[in-house]
Structures are given as C-alpha cells and as structure tokens.
Length: 142
Image 1 (tube, rainbow, N blue to C red):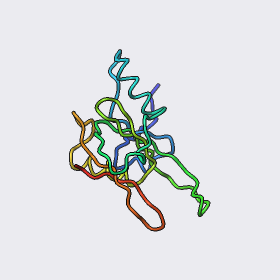
Image 2: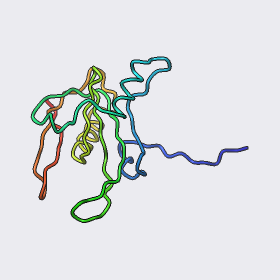
Image 3: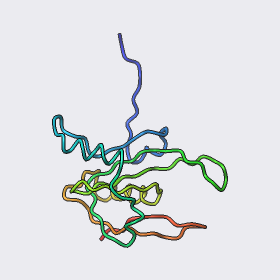
Image 4: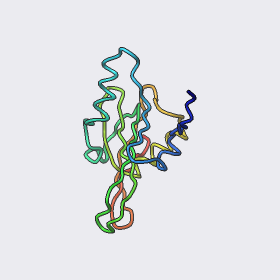
C-alpha cells in the first residue's frame, strides 16, 4: 500500500504558519543517550527558568525549541498565534518565553549563524523593550 500522506518540512521561516502544537527542535537525542534525552524532555516539559527573570543578564544559547500555541488576547478576545520559545544553554539550563521578540531574535540568529545547534553556545543579553502599549522581550548579542 502506497503512503500518499504528505509531510511538511517545518523550518524557522515557516513555523509561524503551522498549526498549534507544531514544534521545531534543534536538538535530537542520540539513541541510548539518556542524559541528552533528559535535557530535551525537561526543556519541553518544564524549562528551568522564565526568560523574563533574566532581563539585562547574559545567557548562552546552544539549542532552541519552538512550539506554536494559540492564546486568547485578553483585550480583543481574538485568538493570537504565538511562539513559545525555549532556549537551551550548553549545560542544559533552559529559559522559556512566549514572545514574538525572542522568536524574531532567534530567527535572525539562524540567518546570521546558521541553524542551531550552535556548538559552545552564542551569548545573548536579554532585553525588554517598549512596543505599542506594552513591552516585549528580545535578545541582543554580546
């Protein structure tokens, strides 16, 4: 029986067009590598830190996990599609943010440095900037 089901290739450039629950992950555990599998699982399931707690602090990013979610906009009542981004440091520490600014920073890093993983990590400083009536997290390379 022939498989006629098509599979879409998800990339940093197309993930925002995907359905909620779609994930892009730059790290895949090698078969039998339980420690690496633990890092991936914990980053997906329960990241170590909230990125907002690291504003004006330096973090190192080696791997990235991005998951698409739909969230109700409390002001308009409309559903917004947003990226949940988890940044993973070389030591396995993970930082989560649901922020288009962080997503765009990672997308720009992919353009500048190629796709993650970035061996040894790239150092960023977490920034919070004013946009419209609110604030947004972003990353600045240091």
